[in-house]
Length: 166
Image 1 (cartoon, rainbow, N blue to C red):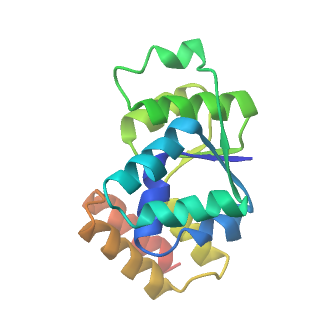
Image 2 (cartoon, rainbow, N blue to C red):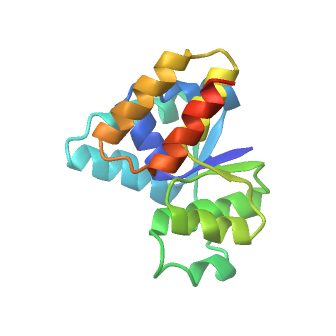
């Protein structure tokens, strides 16, 4: 069972790769707040990526779940976004095998609760390893993400390039 936060859905949609989540994991679960952030507020803001996420929900491979916040996670609401709080709470409740979050503070919090946490870049690398996209696709997709405002350290970028060359 895989749980996702907003940013991986948004960024993968923006580069036309949202379907990689379906191809890799079959189904994704998201909390209601993530849906609200990505789809409802995304549409209000005129972001076209909101429509691809909405379509995935309609098609049933992204499932929206209302969640009661885990009290232990709720105390971090002042440090991370509410969608991240809900995503971590949902992952704990469902005993998710993976939660996909990009924000480093949220990742640290999720890991402190024993969750397996990965991000958008992991999705691209796993898609490459599963032969769903090429090495050049990964590089081009990461460069597109950077142009869209995705933050990645030069060290991590170098590690990814090294991983692709293995």
